[in-house]
Image (cartoon, rainbow, N blue to C red; front, top):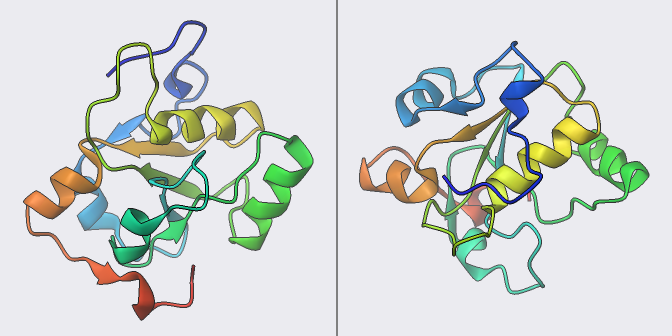
Length: 146
């Protein structure tokens, strides 16, 4: 894991959930009423979201509309049903970032922490590991959650 200068992992400020969760942990908790899974493969990118729009972890919502503006961030979170008490698991592609570049999932986790959401974890290995382990996926077209 590469951490950009000045980046503090969210685990430093919260103890309610682990900063990182395994694919097994997510598989065991998938479908929980208090958990929201966010696909961050399009977070911070322009409208070219083809990778994230093909397949995803079942029930995952797209995180590409989050903004670094606090009011906008809270509006998007509310629209997606994310409350301050929800457990959020964020994943990205799971590929290595370039040196000095923080992954989209870690950036989004940090943004949640900045805006007061304390129960946010990142999926270790991301979608790449989830898919390699042949865990369930769904077509993005299978759900109106996008």
